[in-house]
Length: 576
Image 1 (spheres, helix red, strand yellow):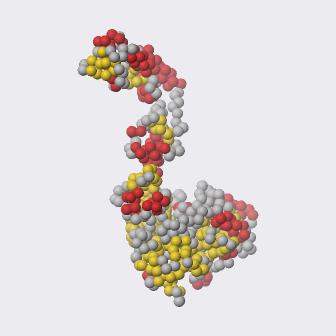
Image 2 (cartoon, one colour):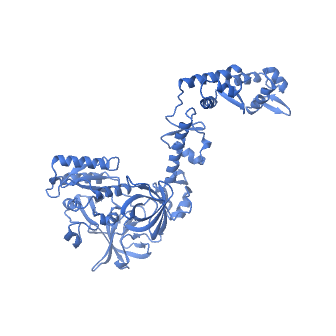
Image 3 (cartoon, one colour):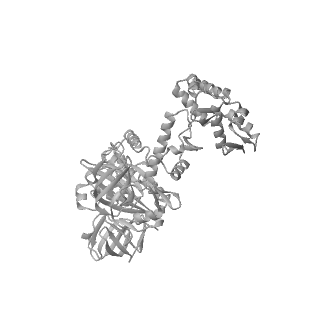
């Protein structure tokens, strides 16, 4: 059955719970304190089946800043966001924080509901719509529909429901073939049944009578029963809100953040290699930070050590089941605020980052099977069938390469680009970066930006002509290089760049450290020597054929040897 797990997000008292009730008929506030105080304190759940074969599950998240950790325990695992902003109050602090959390968690779909539309006049509603559009610009909600609604009058509820149905029907079902994992967000006891845990099944599937394991305590347990949306089932699959009746444990031994999964499959971790991104507008983070690490339904205190502006190592104070590719949120303790979010690259990594690994090495370091490693596209990028690269490291190398080429173009505007050998990157990776780049191309042994062209100013164009003519007119008795450059009519530094350009274009050819010849002169020389194929050649004969002094004869003969026009035989040469 197609199903979509939808999380609400927004500031306190903006009508999230009332909106869920209007959509489903279910009051997601289950605690007595919530009903007495009129605010959502903990995660609430509701569902509806708007049409046969389609289920919308709602995770109602608390909006008060004191209960952000509860919000974080529920937001992981949702498929789409129902972003709520009250029409009479517009954007508030937790509106922004909830939005940043969902953005950093990689949520890709959603609908924006302007609640309490009955309390706002048309002008106010338009202003709120504009403010919300500005907030979500350039994000996953940039093109999301904005629907004014009222849970009191019912206005807009059908239109909002239809938008959610469209997301559900156009969504790709989650893969139920992976390994079963369910982060626990509630654990309690039901008379006559015993211990029950609930959560969103984030991967794989589970069946009645399956043996499972509780991480990180390693309790082996049996699945006595399963429920999805209040209905008993024999099998629950990835993406479903699931209740599991467990045999062999008391609920007091299970707490929020633990994970039910397959036995003997994984190992909890305490050290992580991560990529991260700061909250919009957040100042650069300090090199070492004590943070609250949120992933799945878990919250663990941790120490964060920055490696660069996008990578960090995190040491958890308690072990937790977390895998490469899992996303997380970081919050600072004083004052309590969301500061960043990211994705796990490796668990219990070596002291130094190993950017290039074989599939076998990744299996050994993560405990993941080969099929999971090859599906871990947020973690690695394959460049050969059995060779993979740390994606965050690769992205860093790509940015560094692009920046290095851009700097070269700025510093050396009269050169095509830096040579390949100038980059401290292994050849297979450099080849891969260039081949997959949107901005760089290889031009022979030179790397350049696609749009880069060499444009000479008028004075430089005249200098280029003057330098070329000086060498072309000298034939094989070439002039002094420094004198030619000084007479070019441009500053010496610019003249040297023009000379480099002529050498790169093979208009001029460097034969010795201080000897540069015009290519036409060397071409004529090769044609002259070729007429004497098979003949013995020594320096005296060469001087006679070419009418050059010994100063030029020896370097030119060595050049002809390198070009395989001639070959040495003792102290003489033979023309090939």
